[in-house]
Image 1 (spheres, rainbow, N blue to C red):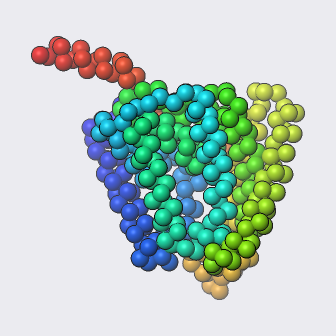
Image 2: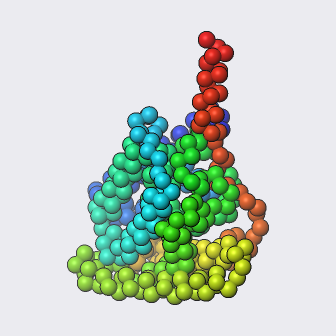
Image 3: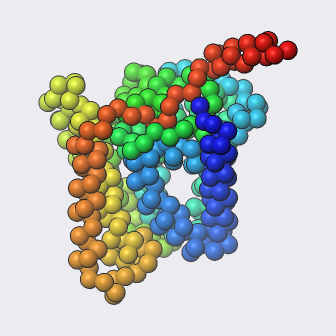
Length: 353
């Protein structure tokens, strides 16, 4: 469990990140250019690396996660338990939502601040609503959040275990806690077919889906985006279909105990592909004029100086996720069982009337 000082530090960090996020959402409506750069060109490019290296930190400070625990920390939640079957459907839904949302960046969100702001507000409101109904992190953070399965895909080899800033005791809200299970993966949890389908689909298709996303340009208006909606979706789907077929072929050709290695290579391929394109795009070296650009350095530094960086990031992620041996490490330590924790409190109260 966290010490009193650690609890205060995490609370301070969490509130700071939440306030910065609130400022970013306000900027999306008032200063759209600033808000869009802050969200899509600063936060989102950092997030995959943070999730891969320090998923526990991300889980502690994510603004949506903070809001999803609102009712729980105030004893206002009904604390309904999710069945393994329902949880499986929630997880599968989260993967479908992820794959539906990603291409919409090109058609609307990337260049429309208010649309992105509304999207973030709606997602946060859903997370808040779920905390009034479901126990612990089961409703949002460990199931329906579209980012959660990517957390488990990229976060299979965390660099460090950090304290759990949200859970002081464990209520066993989900089967297979992603926070405290060593080396979690998308396969973690019940063995219902929705869970298996979610894990198989995400691991297999994500590298190709990410590649396909970078083959499509942003559209300046909604009407223009909608007129190109078919290729906007079909190119990532085609890329995802190719890598999904390769994944199915690979896992069918290796023993069961070797499949985790295949999973990690596919995770490395997905995050490597993301940074292969994203880093040059951030600095103005995109084949599409201005797409995903944070600052234009195309006239300042040689193109080769930027384009060599993806080779280093690819080598690092393949080494880190697929080759490096760093043992079985959890994102966070498991908190004491809630029943045992309550029993200890009762004994303490009885001994000190």
